[in-house]
Amino acid sequence: MEQLIAQDLSKRYYHNELTYRDLENLEKQFGIKFDNIISEISYVEKNLNLKIDNLDIKIDNLEQNIKKEPQMYS
Image 1 (cartoon, rainbow, N blue to C red):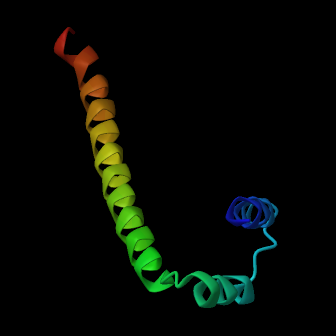
Image 2 (image 1 turned 135 degrees about the vertical axis):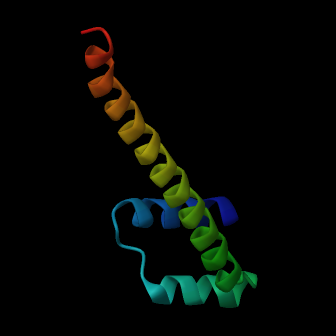
Image 3 (image 1 turned 180 degrees about the vertical axis):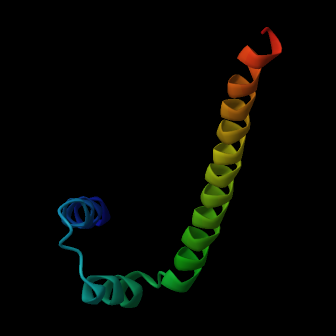
């Protein structure tokens, strides 16, 4: 039964049809605490943003080094 519910929810999530009421019903039925899930998602999002920012900085540094490189050999 839980497998069927999970499949239905994943299908509706994929099609962007999952509602807040669905999440409330899950919380009531299974005791799922979405506050914890939301905080975990926020944590992961912040970490990903930091990693993306670091990659942007590295890319910018590489671009600057590449621009300087031809001048070194002139």
